[in-house]
Length: 157
Image (cartoon, rainbow, N blue to C red; front, side, top):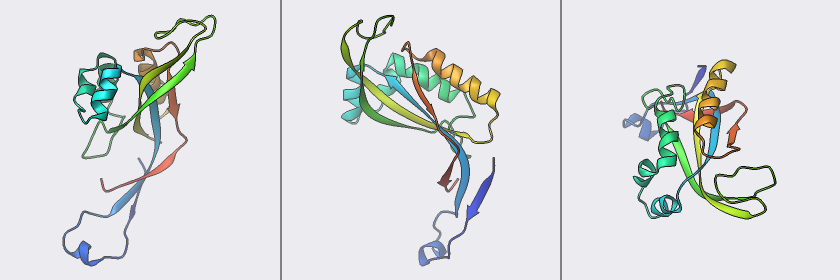
C-alpha cells in the first residue's frame, strides 16, 4: 500500500498533543446497495444502529466485511464501512425472478448504501474474489455493486 504523509506547518494545537499528521493513500471504494427490512431502516433512522446486526439480510454483508481483512483496512482499525439509509426504486421486467415484487410492477425497497475500501494495489484476483463474495451473498437477482477507480483517502491512521 503506497502512502504519503502530509505534514502541514505546526500550529499551537499541534504543539499541545493533537493527533499525528495526515496520511494519504490510494484506495478503491466498494459500494454495495443492500436491501433490509423496512423495520431495520426505520430503527436505524431512529438511532438504533444495533438493528443492523439483527437484520438477517444485512448480517450476511457484515460477515463478509468482518472476514475479509482486505476490506476497510485502516491500520489500527479494521472492517471499516459506512452506511447511508435510503430507498431504491425499480420496475420488474419480463424474465426477472425478483426477490421483491412481481413482473410488470414498480416497487420501492428499503436499502442501505454500504461503502468500504480496498487498497488500490489489490490484484485482479483479490478484487474478483471480494466482489464474487458480495454478489453471491446478495439477496437480489441483480446486485448493485460499485467499484471506483483509484482515489486518494486521507486519514490519520
